Amino acid sequence: MYLSHLSLTDFRIFSRFDQDIPKNALILVGDNAQGKTSLLEAVYYLAALDSFQASSLSELINFSALQNDLAVCRIVAEYQKGKTNHTLEIRIIRDKLSNGNSSIRKEVLLDGNQQKINSIIGHFNAVLFLPHMLQIATGPPQLRRHYLNLALSQVDPQYTESLSDFNKALTQRNALLKQLSERSGDLDQLSYWDEKITQAGSYLMHARIQAIRDLGLLAASIHQELTKGEEILRLNYLPSYEPMPSPPGQIELPLDNPVDRSSIGLPDIQEGFREKLHSRRMDDINRGVTTLGPHRDDLQFISNGVNLGSFGSRGQLRTTMIAIKLAEVAWLKENTGHWPVLLLDEVLAELDDFRRQDLLERLANTEQALLTTTDLGLFSDDFQRSAVKWFIHNGQLAG
Ligand SMILES: Nc1ncnc2c1ncn2[C@@H]1O[C@H](COP(=O)(O)OP(=O)(O)O)[C@@H](O)[C@H]1O
Ligand SMILES: [Mg+2]
Image (cartoon, rainbow, N blue to C red):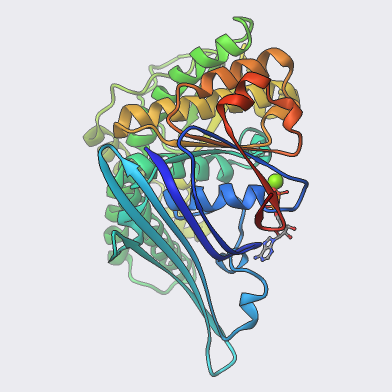
């Protein structure tokens, strides 16, 4: 698929931006703090309805627009998916209330019709690479779960639903556990929330098992090429609830040989998870929180048997994340039937010549790629000739 038109109103530094987008490679060139990353963020927002950057929705609204009582930020995109053209409009609306508080909400329109947010995630597909995404490997586990959730939500609407159900049920169950730990609350109600957690949580785990295996295989082969065969990358899922029965006396598997759980069916995960959740009840009540489930999952990136999250050099992490992102492109294509738009923020800057050239050649395989740079000199002459260049200055197209 490809984006043919993008219009931004009061999105971050862009008070007004309205442009046709070229189909192949587009290089956004500009000094720091001119809006290049924000433009990629806007395009990614169309796919995930979530930002990898912003900690609150209001951050996305232009500062001066926020001065008004009613502030509306708009991302409107036209894109072609297969043979069909679509228009997707996202509005973020911040209202000041008479009591001095404010409310903020999102509205989404697909082809002119208002839709539920969850049903729109993944209608448009994009893969985003930001330099600080190296933290996916090195940072806290919630970043890896967030990464998995964003990727999976784009390919599987039921994942999005299950995630939303799970989070609601988890909040309710934790509130009830707290009451029970203070000797109030209704124990019968716990069974109700346990079942919700079991249903939604098992779906998440099952989907994560398959996705991590598939993404892992794709990433490993790209990574092997990027490292000229010197390193072998593995993705290792560390589920909070282990659905694999471990044979007695089994010693821990070596790091470069992750457990293959892909043959376990959803009903088996449900049955085992339900039982384990139940057996942890007293513990959960004592602690006042749910101690088992996909909200505590983790994922490791292993190269030649070493956990990159703890021991990876910056170069290794960068190569790994590029492999993962290119794998995500292929994985989205396999699962949705469409090429996602690839969004690469400042990726070339820290790569050596070989990897830089290799990456640029790989972009020829995607339908559309948007790249940012402060230094056009990093792009080969050939690539520059095949791409369109935009110079971005202070939230506007210059020259
Ligand atoms: N909500 C907002 N309103 C106005 N400006 C913003 C908003 N959020 C961020 N900015 C500003 O936008 C500028 C551009 O950011 P960014 O897209 O990261 O630039 P670049 O990638 O070109 O370095 C920054 O100076 C930042 O302060
Ligand atoms: Mg930037």
